Amino acid sequence: MENRFYTFVGGNTGPWSITGVQPVIGPSLEMAPCLDILNANLQEVPPGAQWFLRGVTSNQRYVTRPEQASLVAIQESLGRAAATCAALIPITKNATWWALTQDERREIFEARSSHIATGLRYLPAIARRLHHSRDLGEPFDFLTWFEYAPSDSEAFEELVAALRATEEWNYVEREVDIRLVRKDRV
Ligand code: HEM
Image (tube, rainbow, N blue to C red; front, side, top):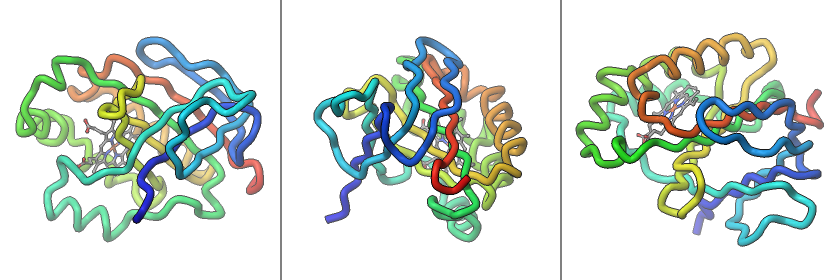
């Protein structure tokens, strides 16, 4: 069976160099030299590492069939040779968000914040994978992971700024922005 667990380890090993760790809202994470991403459910911080964050890939909650078709038609996979830049952005939403119903959340997420419509404009340049952590009792609700080429860095900043300015982000109570470069592809 497919293993849907991922563990992100901030420490001294791994293919990604961490270039910056910025708290956006709430407490930050410690700076670490490298990031390793394991397709596994680690039970403890590996020796010498500063932190680990776990999440699972899951079914989609909000996308409609037409949105799904648009995403599938243009989205790229992770691991492209030219995608030497990455961002790991762990996010937690507040109790008010989680007390809403699914239809109320979809209304804010897409009808009023255009998360998918905005994101689609940045495909295929940005490849992404969403990990859910809330039900694992982790410190963050989501671990969002993005890969892009250096020439798309500005576009990525524009996208992140656009999303942070939306109504959806009023419900974000913790966000850390971790930037990385791929060691073996630079
Ligand atoms: C690259 C363009 C992007 C696209 C195409 C995109 C698309 C999506 C889609 C389709 C979902 C909903 C999945 C579902 O139905 O459950 C989603 C969820 C999410 N995205 Fe994005 N996204 C993009 C960029 C971003 C960025 C830059 C961030 C963070 C700064 C972000 C943070 C999130 C979070 C936290 C969720 C989970 C929301 C929730 O379930 O409450 N996304 N995204």
